[in-house]
Length: 323
Image (cartoon, rainbow, N blue to C red):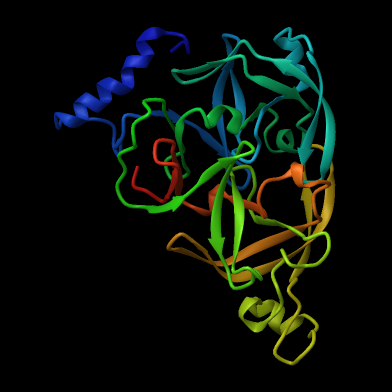
């Protein structure tokens, strides 16, 4: 179906009417949201069909940790886009200077936005997973809607009704949009403040924390409650016999811009609302260049959950609802 077909906007309402009348409808269709099939690549990355300026579909990775739309330079040329200038793109491994464009339309399913900015950058890391990847669709698009990422059924849900979503089950977690990032608070005894504020990020597979530039306050603190069994048995002891190294391994962090080495640890548990995650690997990155480069203390992977839904009307996340 063409993304600008006006009849496509009535389809979610028709499905909702069928549901209210008790008539057969698609399995697990619990809201008036439009369900868009997606596919996955790599470790928990979802890829959706996206139309740009009425052309497509193009293959875009859904990334709630990115606040803009990214496209490959080749796609910018194919669309005949003219650069509006340059911008600095912040990545996990540092800033990158990129070309800035303005898109006439961006459409996913029947949902269309006009005049969105887009940045062009080579996406070699993603294209090594799938050479057909054309870009990244970030929160700059998704945050205009209530949306859901259903990893179990490989589905993207979009809803622009402005009404609270109707869902069954799941863990409700308060969330807030700040600096175009979707922030949630997680609890952990490894944090000196007993909690971290993390941005929901569907473009990563591990929890990331940003190290404090003056101390290791934002990194998991040492102590037997915070160390994985592997770290307790194999890592050098620090301080007293009851403490161990907070780091269990050195890992390589790669983005489409560059790569760096970082240290990591496995936390026995991390509490997101009332949902307790067990044996969570946390990667500790160097501090950002400035406070403006990042909101919160780090990043929370969406793929840790079976599904995540952001309800725009209530400003909440629902983790693992039945969809």
